[in-house]
Length: 335
Image 1 (spheres, rainbow, N blue to C red):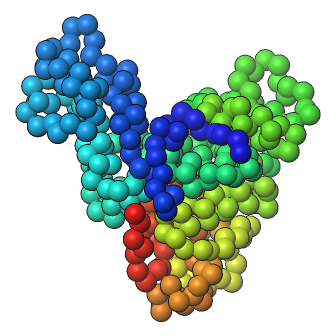
Image 2: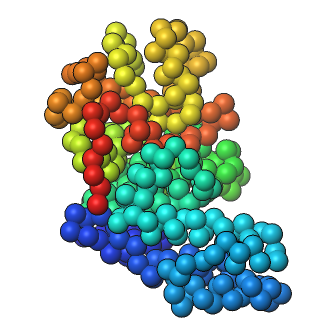
C-alpha cells in the first residue's frame, strides 16, 4: 500500500475501531511549531510563555486573557484561530465528527485554511488504500482551489496556487514542449505519467483533464462517492454526464457557490445562455443504493451534482454541500 499526501499529517493521528481519525498530541504540536506560531526574537513574555506551555501540554486549557495578553496583534489573531481549531478537535471523538459538527452548526468561525486542512486529512483517510492516482488527483479539488488552464478543446484544471499564472503551457504525455519560450509547464495526469503521482502528491503540480467523458470526470465522481460513504455511511452511485437534457430536476447539489447559483436558476426553470452554460465544468447524476434513506419528495429520482467556475476561471469546491445538501432522511452518528 503506497502513501500519499504525507504533509497533511495523517500519520500523526490515531484511528478508532470504526476507522475515524483520533487527534493526538503529536498532531496538535505540529500546528504549534508552524512558522506562524513560532515566537520571534522580539516576542513578548506572554506569547513565549503560551507557546512553551502548549509544547509541553498541547491540550492545556487556555484562558482568553492569556491570548489577549499577547502584544502583537497578528500573533493574537493566529493564536485565537489555532486554539479555536484545537478546541473543536478536542470536543469531538474524531476529526470526522468535528468536521460534521462544524458544518452542521451553520456558524463556521474559522478561516478557510483550517477547514481545508481538516478536509485534506479526512479525505486522506477516506481514500486510504486507494491505488488510483486519477481519483487522488481529482480529490484535490475538495481542499485545493483550482484554475482553468485553456488548452485546445480540453477542460484542464490546475492547482490555483501552483499554477497561479494562467498562461502556463500544458504538456501532454509523449509530446515535446509546445512553446520553448514559455517557462511554466503543466504536466497533465495521464496513463503514461500516473505512476509518478505517488512521489509528487504533496506538490500538487499535475493538471487534471475534466473534459466530459474523460478519466478525470470519472475519477472525480469516485472521489465524491468515497467522501459521502466515509462521512455519511451512505452508499451511492455517481455517473458523470455530458449534458443535462430532458431531466426531471427534482433535487440538485451545487458543489461550489457558482454551481449553486446556476442550480437555483435551473430549479426555477430558467434557460441558461451559452455564456452561463460555459461556466459549468461537470455534471453528475447520483442515485442511492438504498432508496429508503431518501426523503419522500425525491424518492427514486436521481440527484444532480453541479461543478462550476467563477468568471475569473477559478474553482472553489465546497465539499460541505455534500454533507448538508443531500435529500436524506436522517443524520448518521459518526464516532
